[in-house]
Length: 212
Image (cartoon, rainbow, N blue to C red; front, side, top):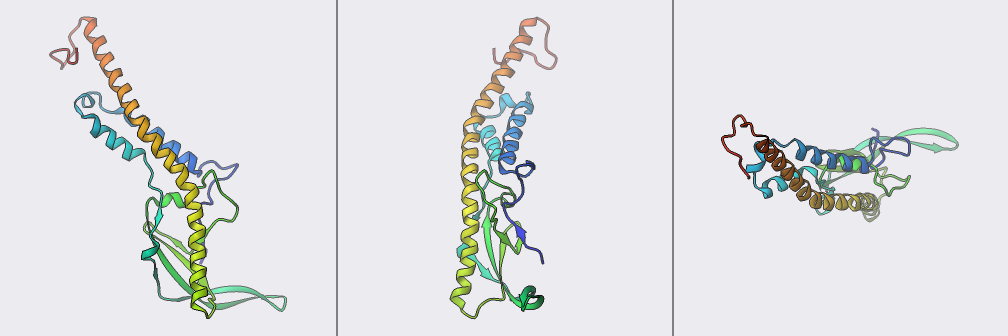
């Protein structure tokens, strides 16, 4: 079974799966949501409701590993190719698996942060709720096996730390931008309504000039 390479998508020539681009797309979606919010409903919607909804839409939840809830799965077997006496040999070996739950967005595991390296972590499986780590052909010492799992976890945590730095900055910017964007949108709508009122013709469906 092929392993899943984490934080490995996106490169100097492929920008489609960089974390920076995903965060920029989230920001743009918030700007678009403000600009397309129903102008007939926005004036009657409390600021705190709009801000809460837009901040939630634009923010990203960086995954957090719940290592204290990690559990071993039943052992399986896997094919392992080794070099013996100069020849490539495939043999069946024991595979131990550790399921590590996490909270946050799965997609972050697949995007390359601004800080990275060529030695990306790999996992046996990535689901919406947990990572499966594997040790093939394990040694006979339990403490050594545990250390091997912990080394994999530490490697993943290092990459998550790099992603989290970007995500925290992004989330802070979203919290700061949304109130400003909302105020600009409300002012735009008020100016348009006032301009209509000054033209002199009645506005269909509006018996008076509200907000004047």
